[in-house]
Length: 61
Image (cartoon, rainbow, N blue to C red; front, side):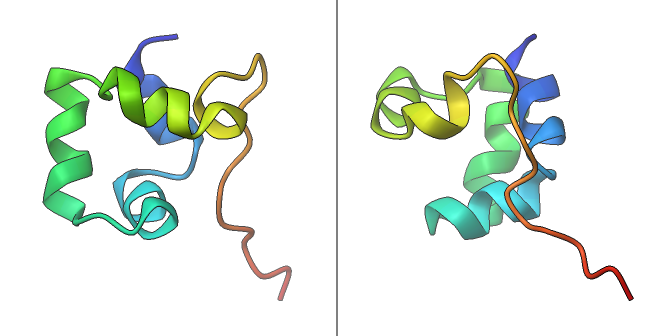
């Protein structure tokens, strides 16, 4: 899975930027440039897993 697919699987640019407390634009740039290696290492449970799950749960309403 490439980094763009991973970001989308995690819930999209907004979800990832909120989770990491970085700007939307920063994460949006990762769609093209890739997620920095240090970010992946600092957040292994999110980015370096075999089965990534969405970061924000949707309301079952």
